[in-house]
Length: 376
Ligand code: AOF
Ligand code: ZN
Image 1 (cartoon, rainbow, N blue to C red):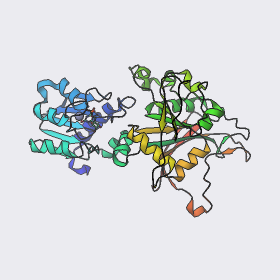
Image 2 (image 1 turned 120 degrees about the vertical axis):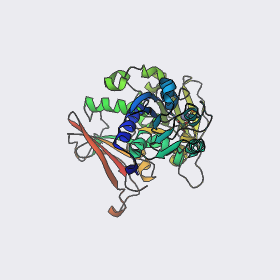
Image 3 (image 1 turned 90 degrees about the vertical axis):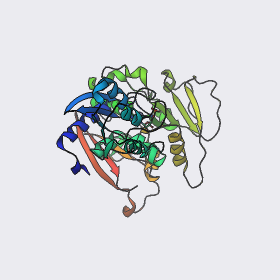
């Protein structure tokens, strides 16, 4: 409930959220977190988490504040941690520095924390409050939160289509449906994801690289960091029939490739950055559901899917798609062209999967639409 918070509280939490945003491309598998320390109405320390293994947001802010942290209020976008992970507990650090109040946007669902950070603060006599700008904090870490809460990655399904919902001509020709600016936007979306998922069918048909072309990202995204040296999304290819070959373009760039299948496979002809991930269908689950659970166990927070209509349809039918991102180009491809997603089990209109509109924007001559499933 935000009524307990003042306008000033909102302003400082928004500042912390803006700081957290700076880690958006680099923190996976950790969440993006921002923190400001405020004393006598002035910001005395700022921090954000940049990369797993490096300082947490609170510690960075405490370092900047030094002695000024004593008696300050901390605004943090996530509950301060209480555990010894790659770094010591932030709750302890805040207590030791003499911070007297902590306002967190939301609780940390990580079972290692989950309310313990707030408890630790309360036990030390530090006042705390939770829930300020929680919705914004949640949307910053959809992937991390989904993995912690459900043991699954947050799956974003990208589709580029014509006005009449087609993705390729009858002969498969699809380069390009959308314009250059929309394709640059896709690069930014790829860069944010922990992993990019496609299929052997797509690799065989289009021979894509599935990498991020960092130089194509808008300057605001490239910031001041040499992002491409820090983290590259893992390219995951669903390849149960072992059709992907070392000659494919995927292997021309040395960022990780995981080939998912249900049998061991010989990778001696493949480069060292290529790994085989063996996934078996678990009882009560489909293969894709089992694969997603396995990817979450391997700390994949968020997945950006670029594949054809079969995988798109299956992810939707099996309740695995958390978000649809449609890029719509002002073209008509006609009835013979290929459709967006295959939903082979759908026969009655009453059973059609329903989506809730989230937001849209115009990108040059194309439109980007984002939808969330109405029920999951
Ligand atoms: C915070 N502040 O800035 C972040 C937090 O392995 P570690 O030590 O980096 O811990 C990672 C966990 O800590 C992560 O899973 C999440 O629960 C929390 N992240 N907590 O207090 C931060 N990044
Ligand atoms: Zn921490």
